[in-house]
Amino acid sequence: MADFYQNGITTTLHNLSNRPVEEIESELLTFSKKRPLGLLLPSLFSELEGKAMPKITEQIKQVPYLNEIVIGLDRADLAQYKHALRFFKDLPQHHRILWNDGPRLKALDAELAKMGLAPKEMGKGRNVWYCMGYILATGRSESIALHDCDILTYDRSLLARLIYPVANPLFNYEFCKGFYARVADGKINGRVSRLLVTPLLRALKRTVGNNEYLEYMDSFRYPLAGEFSFRRDVLNDIRIPSDWGLEIGVLSEMHRNYSHNRLCQVDIADNYDHKHQDLSLHNDQGGLSKMSIDITKALFRKLATQGFTFSTESFRTLKATYFRIALDFIETYHNDALMNGLVLDIHSEEKAVEMFAQNIMKAGQSFLDNPMETPFIPSWNRVSSAIPDFLDRLKDAVELDYQEHKQ
Ligand SMILES: O=C(O)[C@H](O)COP(=O)(O)O
Image: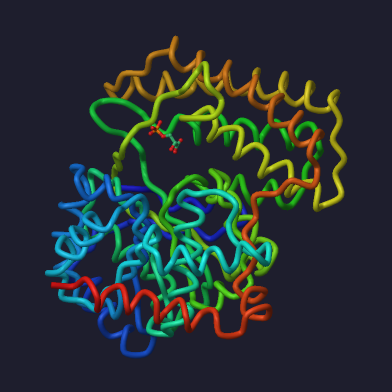
């Protein structure tokens, strides 16, 4: 059971009563008559063959209130796309799969690339972006939830709690971020969130000075959660990064576009486990190392748009401040773990913090070397203004793929 503390400037909706999921779902069903509800699932083909996705799909089959499910499928050849069509076939809700590697969607991507409008990197950001365009094109959903496809502890109450704040017509939220405790197998996980993001935000507050944006970011209990929900109009004017800065980038965009009372966060699960990546200590092009660089750059870029100037010296100071704060956090997490009978390996935590500290310098250097380089994908408003019928053709391409290959 959680407490009811409101931390910082973002409204927090807690789980104070463990309401039965059926009860929430029956409310959602009523809401869905006024605000049709959708679900966006960005997935890799390999996730269909993993442990999490079959269970997630079984749970979603029982969800009564969804008007549309949009699955973005990455890294699938034709046989794998057909496999995916079979995999999702029994979903009772209307659903379509964006076969991102298929010839039709690739041709559309090439058309955008010619005009400098296509995402520059493959990955979850790109996948989510195309699915968002598709949702705009179908107009079938008014409020939409998005969650990762590697959640091992998935239960359909996660979805119900995630979508509720943007589904209830009495609420005025445009966007809602999920949070949970990433505790599994007797361990406290969430290494990047705990050991990089929170201490870095605290260090930035100390070095660049207290700033409303940093306060806002720090008020999210799990800023890296891949789970969030939003009203459809959010999609027109959002610029999302195609790299690992996606989650931070989405929060930053919400900060730019809406006032605080339109944003909230919600407790969606008692615990959460997912696929864990390697730290990737010796290769900053992969694993949590690349993730930490992308995330740090996303924060620097946002602060630069607010008029802050950075230099090698300021990054050096930031690194030192971060390092001290992060080491103190390890002690806090360790004590929390001990009291709860959990395990926390101080040595691996310190190794992670040392790597993140180095990556703050790398992110800083890369920011100084290439100030104009951004991973942002253009907003759908911009694409539609350049190519007015693009969204319709995206919708048609998804439908043609489906009609051609469904069995
Ligand atoms: O949320 C995070 O911090 C990263 O996704 C890493 O998570 P993990 O430590 O649970 O693998």
